[in-house]
Image 1 (spheres, one colour):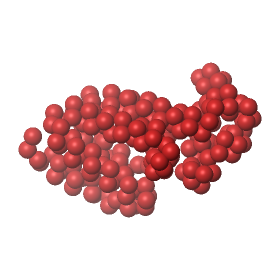
Image 2 (cartoon, rainbow, N blue to C red; image 1 turned 135 degrees about the horizontal axis):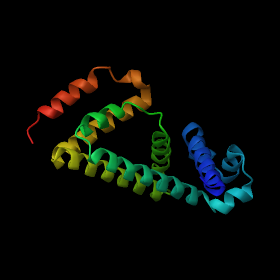
Image 3 (cartoon, helix red, strand yellow; image 1 turned 120 degrees about the horizontal axis):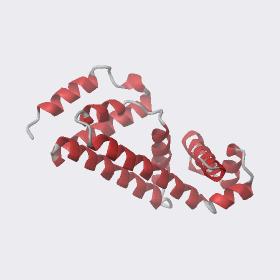
Length: 176
């Protein structure tokens, strides 16, 4: 990764962390630059505004979403992998998702909402490809959302260990 890309990534990481840990208002340009160990001028070179930082996170999530669609679409066990990974909330993808979720709750960050909808579309397409059934894919996606939110709120202990097994058994028993 080139030095400019590393700096850009550090700035996005810092902005994500500030938003997740302290809320949207804490993610100021000055605080983001300081948290990333970059001068404010360095930040402004990469991101001219807070909106540009939000857009940077949206682009990051799109890259994650595209990669997940490619990865899951070709897997015969896509449903199982997708649901089991819904219990995790500590990957780089998750941090970007959580930051955009917080930002998307505010009217001024339409780019965050758009990125979350696009991610949903990527996952739905991947599951539809893998399962061959759009309705089952939609159901699996919404079940995954519930698992993910529960995990994010209460940690991996919030979802019983055998819950995903039981959900998988139910979903795979549905007619297609």
